[in-house]
Amino acid sequence: MPRPRELFREVLSRPSCTLAANIFDPLSARIAGMLDYEVCVLSGSVGKVANLGVPDIVLSNMSDVVDHCRRITRIADVCLMVDAEDGFGNVVNVFRTVREMEAAGVAGIEIEDNFVPRRFNVADPGLVSTEEQVGKLEAAVAARTDPATVIVARSAALGLCPLDEALERIRAYSQTGTEALMLTGSRSREQIEAAHQATSLPLCVLNPPADARNDRDFLAANGVRILMLGNPTFAAAVQAIYDSLKHLKDGGAMEVLGDRMAYPELLRQVNRTDEFLALQEKYMRE
Image 1 (cartoon, helix red, strand yellow):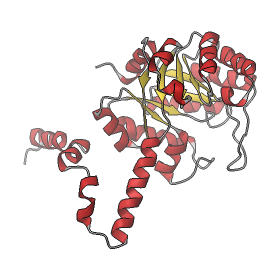
Image 2 (cartoon, one colour):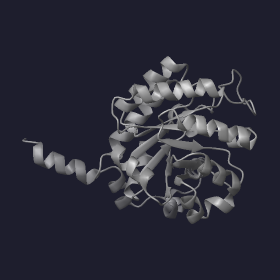
Image 3 (cartoon, one colour):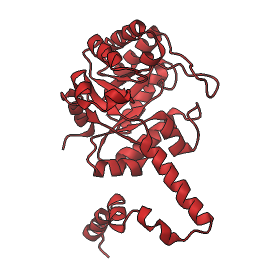
Image 4 (cartoon, one colour):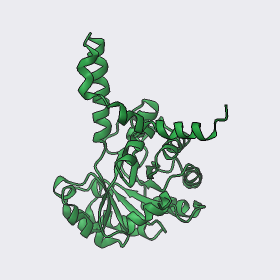
């Protein structure tokens, strides 16, 4: 099997569109691997709440995210693409972020052009200047120690700018040495088509409109190589935890939860019981 970074590049080079698993911790990444997802994506929002129990604000630092990624790549045999926010600062911070994420085994590192607001819950913080983002992307490319690492230029411009301005940003980002573009906030099939025409780089698209996300042929024909559907798995997991704990707290019988619980064989597979028993049998001399 190819190494994760080589597999990630293979996925990006295919003519087809691959659905990524939006995961949030080592357990969810392990299950995604068991289900043969080739690409896992760790977004900033669920990464913060799953790892630290905080909302999507500037309470998570680079070391928090790197540690989270390291625990995921140790347990799951998948290629991991991670939202590295704005690189956690200026171009010097971006340089360090890439080095640290490489060391943690990340395959694809997204550097976004969203402006980081000083206040929480700002509806539209806007974007950094094109010039600043180009400098960050060039720094990210220069920081790589493994040429197989993919730097992904992430842009929210399709949702926040007039189309011509968004396309200018896409063209500028495509000239920095990055090897893929991650698009958020797309509102129509026409925007995706225009983005594809503006760059030769493979596209990764987060939550496109329903008429596009359910048409994998259309996405593939317009350069979309990785499709992300947001974080419904995380939301479903949170609801399941809440419901089961509340049921027990309210005096409900444990037996009622039976059909909602993972069966023992699945739990054994998820936690790799047989693998560790085999290691014990092979190497324990007492």
